[in-house]
Amino acid sequence: MKTLVITEPGSAGIVEQPAPVPSPGDALLRLHTVGYCGSDLNTFRGLNPLIAYPLIPGHEIGAVIEEVGEGVSPQWKTGQRVLVSPYTQCGSCTACRQGRTNCCRKNRTLGVQRNGAMAEWMVAPEDTLFTSEILNEREMALVEPLTIGHHAVDRGLITAKDTVAVFGCGAIGLGAVAAAASRKARVLAVDIDDEKLELAVQCGASHTVNSEEQSLHEALQTLTDGNGPDVAIEAVGLPATYVAAVEEVCFAGRVVYIGYAKVPVAYETKSFVLKELDILGSRNARRDDFQSVIAMLETRRFPVDAVITRTVSLDAAPAALAEWASNPGAVTKIHVRIGDR
Image (cartoon, rainbow, N blue to C red):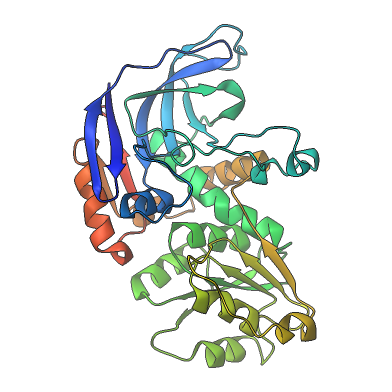
């Protein structure tokens, strides 16, 4: 089968590998659409500390069940459209014992700590599968990245009473915007790209701030009657936005970090204490996040076509990855269409 492999920083190509065979409890999937993630871009650029080369990337999946292995539940059938949760869980670490399997200490994400889905076929355990009778494979491939933002909103305990500032309107930030808006929160989207800010409005943001063209502090103060937002969600991963989230959030506010900075971040820690902030990390997503995002997409209110920047074939996927690396800001989401289906 055709497989995309990143062999070293800056080098990716299509290679032939044997097709997998499902073990008991597994389903054999025929891949239809696989999305590129920011982690795939960092792997290509040599900036992903969690991976080892060579690596097959990809964990944003829309697929069809081709075959089910022995012992698979009858709810899973040949020809059924599915998506896959790309995470693993050990069941015994402190996170798993608390039911927070999304941050399992021993998690191995598809396309990161283990080979991913950028291929014609893959196998997946049945307990990682989700389906929808409404969504197509293209829409299914958007579910996983949107769950990351949804989980951050859940971590921030966001309700309709909150004003939420989302820093960064890439695919992950847009997921946070959509999830917060679905809870009837007032969402303020922050970015330096007007096109991405327009996407944020389509996803439910009520106001936008281009922090390159105006004072972030003054804009957020004006929009919140001088208080600052109740919740700040950081989805960029830069020291400046890490610090801004703490500086701009209100007294007794909540800060949720999704992105992680690649270099140390220096803080004035007095803000942590003076404001009595809740500072929360947010990693991956749980089963209920997947179910909630599927339900959201089934309403067909999310701007799927606008969020997908381009769709390419598997053969063209290495070049698309290199082009993305040369101009990261120009892309919100790249989908790879596998085969001619």
